[in-house]
Amino acid sequence: MLFRLPSALAVATLASLCLTACKPAPVEKTVEEPSTPAVVAPPALGTFTTPAKIAAITDAGYPMFVVTAQFQDRATAVELLLNAEDVELGGADRESFVGRDVTLTYEVVAENNLFDLKDGDLSLVPEAPAHAPHWKTVSGVLSGAERSTGGDLPDLIAVTDAAGVKTEFEYFVTPQIVAANGKQVTAWYSPGVQQLVKAMRAPRSAANDIEPTNAPPPTPALTPLPDPAPKKTP
Image (cartoon, rainbow, N blue to C red):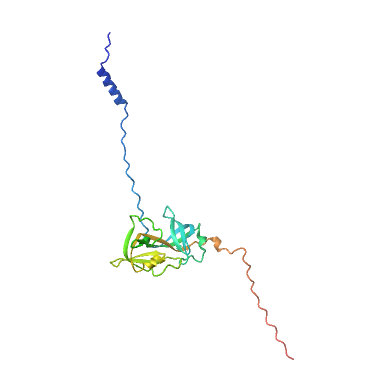
């Protein structure tokens, strides 16, 4: 019996079919869309009372302190400001609250964070940061900067625009800012909020109700002596 060799065309066809069958199926590429960063809503304004655990109290320049607290309804710790001259601690020492569960009363107030203040092309803020695109600006007359800040807390200054709208800032006034008081200036700022501790109370424990063991014994009551009998006269 004679065997016929396959033609060149048949060999090429078989090779093509083999390559096609052995070639893995194309993998569909998935395009990952860029994730949108979560937008955190600012805290609501007002006064609130909530249970909290105080993790730390850090000096921020007397009379201000930073209180790091863990709220029950938040996953991360919260930082609040405490003014040692404007807070109710029930007579307790400030550091005694660290590491304890407390009832915390705090106030959330709106504030404008001032980053730069210019009189023409002259910046009145030392080492002002590079301007960010999300900052707001207001141009108008500067007021409230009659004198340099002399205490530990900032003064309240304002820029009033041509429409009479006043934008206020808490800021430490320098002689350069005093020189621009009453003049046309431009302020760059960012609106925000400030959380201020108004009161902290720790629950009383049984140990707090026990008299200390080294307390002096009570003074016994004195029994009055009877009056001496009257002397008889002869």
